[in-house]
Amino acid sequence: MTDDQAAPDILIEEAAPLVDEALAATDRKADNQEELSALRAEVAKLQDSLHEAASGAGRLAIKEFRRKVRAQPITAAVSVGFLAFLYGVTR
Image (cartoon, rainbow, N blue to C red; front, side, top):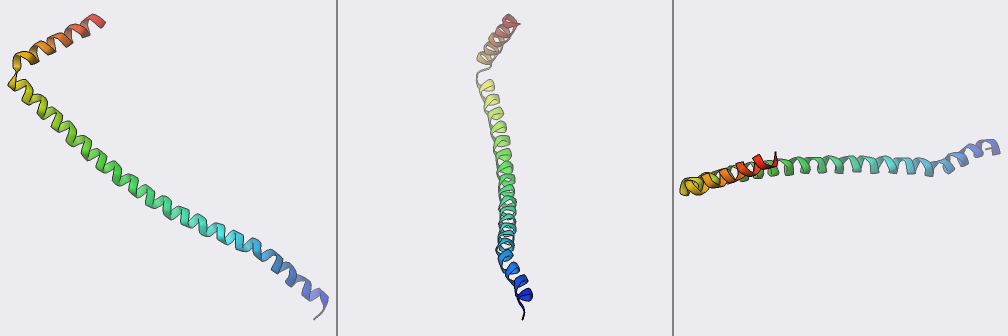
């Protein structure tokens, strides 16, 4: 072997750490993409759970309101009248 043939091998060996760094960065990016996908799936599940809970809470509040109005209709009518009066005054 001549010195000319040995020189390219040295350059390849010196450039190899850069390739290793690039491959490691690609692996980290792939890992980050997988983690991001998992987080997105978790957020979607949480949104569904929150939507169901909010929907259930809304139905429960309406049911409770109707129960109170049926139990005390005069109090409910006076309350609505007072709120209407306040609304009219502020307009």
